[in-house]
Image 1 (cartoon, each protein chain N blue to C red):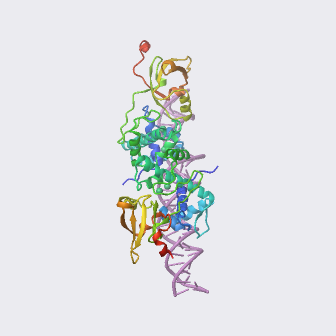
Image 2: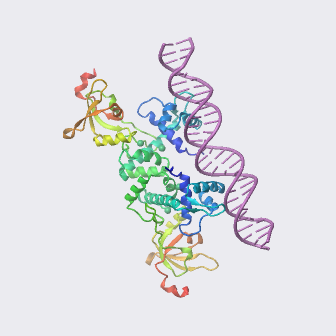
Image 3: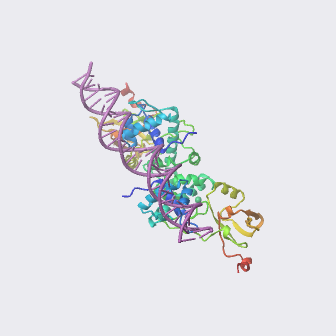
Length: 236
Length: 236
DNA sequence: GCATAGATTTAGGAAGACCGAAACCTCTGG
DNA sequence: CCAGAGGTTTCGGTCTTCCTAAATCTATGC
Ligand SMILES: [Mn+2]
Ligand SMILES: [Mn+2]
Ligand SMILES: [Mn+2]
Ligand SMILES: [Mn+2]
């Protein structure tokens, strides 16, 4: 009989998981502390507890990694979070910049029954409002092959398939600029001396160009069909 | 700047309110403890805190009463709870015996925004699935004039307008017997020597008689249009 | 009128989650 | 190669909520 995890534990495990979702370095104590908004000392303590419970692997001064069991828990939490965000947008008229904080609370209060009935009602969506994939009830996720905009060379184009929901302010800004999920994006060029990336958004008559600072470039994931024709040369 | 109440405090205040919702004796420490499932000593301590925060009036060894501010908080929580129950039944296909525990958790996790958008979506319902009135956002409630079935003399009839949701088992039983909200109920007679009440449920061809033990009789609230014609004599 | 059963509060403690400051490693740059 | 700088853990404490056991009050029944 194992006591179900506290909501703190759920958040720790979820943050540890998320850190490696779009890159593969494991998270360190202080990164965990920063993301959770707690002191480093609190993390040390909690990590010991997580380890005792078999949810993470950790050796003093090392990084923190989820065990298979920890990952299972993380994936249920991620599923909850993303389904809730989807619900808030689709059913309650929230905008995509409002949902994260609400879901952050709700994820700890809903039962498994609730989650599955909600999934049913929503028609088993596969992505949340920010393009993040929703794990299946048994903990499978498929991450669509997308790359951070920042890592793309001029000439590439593709569909925006994910936008990091870390910063609601940025989400509002992007929405105003019509940069939303599934928009076609074209990397035009990079202005010199570390200047911003220039992109073209949309196609046809609604297309417009746009300067993208690095903060934004690293928050937009693009699914490139294939390297754009005209750029194969530059690739060499 | 006052820190928003913890979920414990929310539950205490809600239980104190609910105790006087359908009768008027204020709640005592041990009744509070019983309903919250905590030790008496925990209640003593918490009541002191509630008093410090101006949410209740209390003198040692006396009953616990909400202040106007405490009642405001209680009504917010009751509104949340009942709207959530309604949502679970109407939108997620829960049955009326399943909703209480889920709402008990969710009520502490939702934001005011969530609650109002939910109310909007549900069309501003006035009753929850058990017939309990839903307070308005500014804390108004109207309790329909209903009486516990147990307090009705034979000959009376009316509509079931409320069924206590304390016991899920009883709710399932009642549903199986077609005793649901807005059913016509007729008090036929009381079997002698403190025996059960006999009622007739429904009208016309679907009507059937039914023995009601006291536990159930005190959980059903009936809205009697007026004393039934044939019983005015017995009333004298 | 008053003893005492029963309700209530107080005392002393535990567990969980957090904190700042101090002690302690690790690892890198000179 | 080894000394710090900087990241990490340990230490001593706080706050919240809950507990059991002991002390204390209240109110009822004689
Ligand atoms: Mn999110
Ligand atoms: Mn959370
Ligand atoms: Mn509750
Ligand atoms: Mn109810």
